[in-house]
Image (cartoon, rainbow, N blue to C red; front, side, top):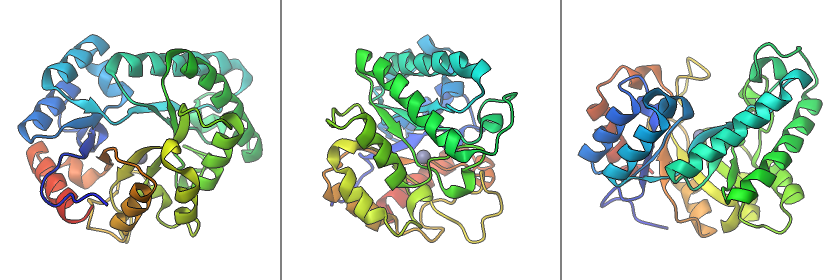
Length: 287
Ligand code: ZN
């Protein structure tokens, strides 16, 4: 297992962590001030400054990307299928322009929440089937341009509105069905916030193996959690054994960035330099 205690070479910042403190260019400048080497930007933040300007700012700062957030939200009614497909193709094109190693997929829950205005449904089985069909379609395009797709299973609390793929096993089942040859184009983004509770997580990480482990996200689970979306904890402030999970992915050969992704009303209220200083300190001591 890599030793993170001496530096933060393998720290990547998911830019949602400081999305309230500045635009993407300001976030990139802050990363440069703190010697952060990689980011995972969100599409709306890229759009906020313009794709060309984002590409330039990332290049000028010499940053790498650890992913691109996000594609997905595949579930919709029939009237919106084309919109969903085109939107996801654009996500791949943007990821390519930005030099991302993968597009992270948050797959969507029930259609009325994933694509607003869709006819309401209670059929989560149908939603899961639709997700798999849509990933198959997206994978064909991803293969043409050589952009890997990383399915991020989300904690079951988000099954209705964000992702009906809720365990690493479910995500890997899809990978095995759609990419039996393990081409490297389809894998998982494992976020400790979503997987820490799962009794199967260690065996599923071993099942994934290096070629399916495309991204690793860290934060912490606070007790109590006051807001199901925006009360994630800074690493070390909650109950997740982050180091055990990192050890498990690294035992499979994962050697990429440890990406900090914290949606938190509390941390969004703090000055960006304080947040980044704390991220770096916790990366060294807790991750
Ligand atoms: Zn994540």
